[in-house]
Amino acid sequence: MADHPASREALPMDVDYRNPEHLTRGGKDRIVGQLQKHDTMAAGRTILVLVAGAAWCAIVVSVVAGGVAALLGHFEVRVPFIAIWGVTATLVLPWAFWYESRTAGRFYEDGAAGLPQGRANSYGEWELRTTEASWLAYIELALSGPRWIMQGLGLRKKRDQVDRVILNRAADIVLQLQDLGEGTSVKKLARPADEESAFRRAMDYLADHDWVGRSKDRRRVWLTSLAAQRLGNAGRTVPSQ
Image (cartoon, rainbow, N blue to C red; front, side, top):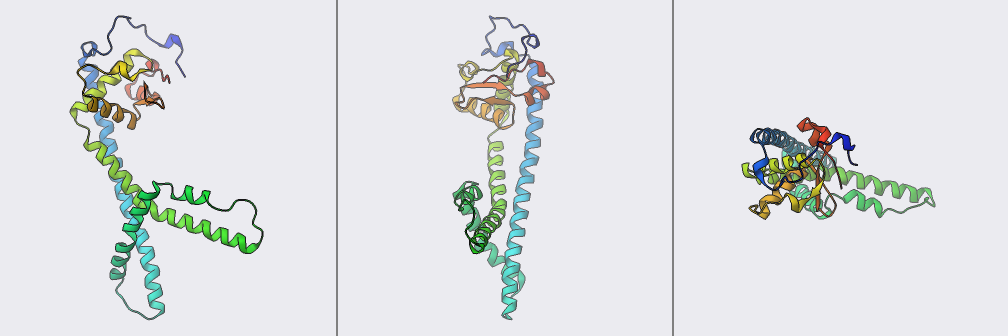
């Protein structure tokens, strides 16, 4: 949805937006500072996701180990809980990480799609369906810890790939889009001196942190309304797909 024409500022038609000379130093430094601020916040979220994932894995292992300990106690087999916990972790966690990777975070959705549809013909069938659905939910909960850890590691890897050069190039892209006041072709933002990988990483960084939106084919890009709020200049952003 485009902004009302009156909200846009008149722009000179002969400005080359691929030329960095027209970008003000102060404005660029301000945006780099904003990018660094949100990158720091993203680092905090990454740590939180990793800690939550590790804690959830420990909880799941403890629950399973508690069940094993109770079963062994029923047969009067005495084993230290820490030993049971260690063996359980050794067996459960590798499987959980492998299965989460294999299902790509879609275990419950895929499992639920395979459940019988329609009304059950008997109480026994209904009970069987309920049990199957319950086990899907339990396994989904067990896979949440590995999922969060894998997501956190993915976020960490992306952050490790971001350096000052990428932040500076990302800031240039933001300024270019802000000056244009509307969505544009990604090719128009590229410069002859750009390294393809650096330009792509800068664009991916902006998209991952909700600074820019992209069309499905990734050929067009625009500043998001959230980016406009961060810049304190919402009236000059046109999310055009």
